[in-house]
Amino acid sequence: MSFEPHLRKFYVSAEDPFYIKELKLEILTRIATEGNISQILKEFQVFFFFSFHFLFKVCLKGFFHLIF
Image (tube, rainbow, N blue to C red):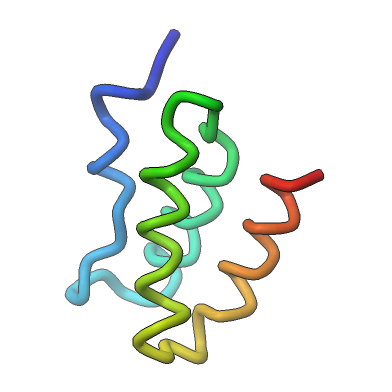
């Protein structure tokens, strides 16, 4: 089953509580494929460039999961 049509539902919203943000980022790393990886990495870039330090660790962990 492909999550491609539902990918944006896992994008983090400013209104999401921290635990939901963390969970959504974890889900994005788990459903990453060659076809959607560029979209997911763009979503992760938001947290790097806008310095959401509390989610930096989660994104970094997600990057390593995607690479290895």
